Each structure stands twice: as C-alpha cells, then as structure tokens.
Image 1 (cartoon, rainbow, N blue to C red):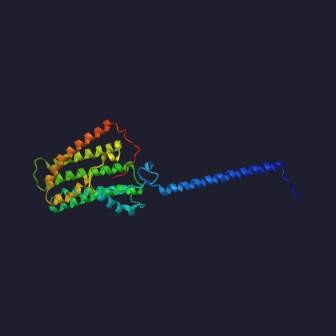
Image 2 (tube, rainbow, N blue to C red):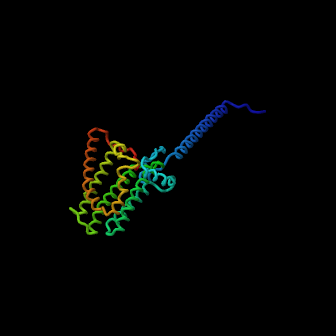
Image 3 (cartoon, helix red, strand yellow):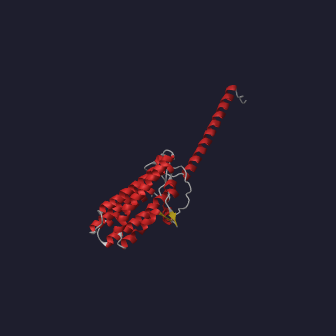
Length: 276
C-alpha cells in the first residue's frame, strides 16, 4: 500500500520547486549575460596595449578620407585589421623613416640630399597609415594620438635643422647661419604642433582642420621636397621656411587665444582622437 505524502514532504517539494526555478532563472541570466558579452567581444576592439582603460567599446564606421594620400593609405592598411600590427607600430615606422631622411639631408652630395628628400616624402605618406588603421579598426587612444603628434613634430624639426646642417656641409653661404635658420623654422613648427594639440583639446579635430583643395591639404606641400632638392633649391627653401614658419606660428598663437577667450570649454581629457 503506497504511503500518502505528508505535509512535510509537500513543503520539501515546494522548496525543491523554488530552488529549481531559481536555478533555472540563474542559468538563463548567465546565458543572456554570456551572449551579451560575446556580442560585445565581437564588436569591441582592444585599443592600445599601453592604455587599455581608454579603449572604445564599439567600432564606429569611419567616413572615407577626403585626401588622396589618406585614401591610398586606407587601402594599404585594410589587410592589417585584425593582425598584431597596431597604429603605434606604423607611427614608429614613420618616425624611423623620417629620421633616416633627415640624416641623409645632413650629408653633402647630390645623391644623399635627394635620397633624404624621398625618405621624408615616404615618411609623410606613412604618417597617414597609423590614423587610417586606427579609424577602420577602432584602435584609438589619447596616448597613441599624442605619440603621432610628437612624431610629426620631431620629424619636421629634424627636417629643417638637417637641411641647415646639409647646407653647411656642402659649403653653402647664406645671410645667416643655415643651422640657425633651420632651428628657427623647426622651433616654430614645434610650437605649431603644440598649439594644435591644445586647440584639439578645446575644439576637437574640427578646430585644426587644414585648408583643402583638389584632394590635397596644406601639409602635402612636403611632397614637393624632391623637386626642391633636384633643382638645388635647398637654400631658398630653408630661408623661406625660417620666415614663413614663425609667421604661421604667430597666426596659430592668435587663433589659440581666440578659441580660449571664446570659452570653447575646458579641455576634454576623456575624448579619444584618432590620429590623422
């Protein structure tokens, strides 16, 4: 004769049922959380090994570049998405090529000077690759952006100082010391890069947008450097840079103070700006 379940067993069954319900709910919650994390991991990108806390959570589609060299750079770096290559690697490559070009410019001789000019042009082009890789892969960081700007400034300063040293090595004569003229141009360029970084912190990338004509920006004038060296125009170019760079730096100083006085807001320390 089967025993009838007592009141105690009924309470136990109810407790077991509640435990099973809670367990099932917990499993569902864990499953949903796991699915959500997988979705995030699928779309998210590890930004920078040097600054992981400033990583972006999702990839944001980037509009196509407006300059020809940036468009070509994007095509070349697209296969690098998902590889161990990071924008910082490309920035380092740009820096090394630029310094090699600057060293060549210090050497006397037609071949050395033109080789240096070609390396500077290559360095200027590679400068676009780090920013494009950062945009299409979602890899961007404040540290990487600062590294890019610092490399730009360092290579450009080295360019002008090296051109002055090259003129001296070749026995050239100018109204003032060629090295001094190169240092003046380089110091002005360094100030321009510093103020540009400050303006970006106040007004974003739009605050430092360069003049644009026919797919080229102002900085693309460096692509003409091989023409200068081929025509033996280093001395006039250096003299023009020693005058033009300080004048442009003065204009940037005025623009910087205008933005500060306008009260564009305090610098945004959390905004992540991709490299150019």
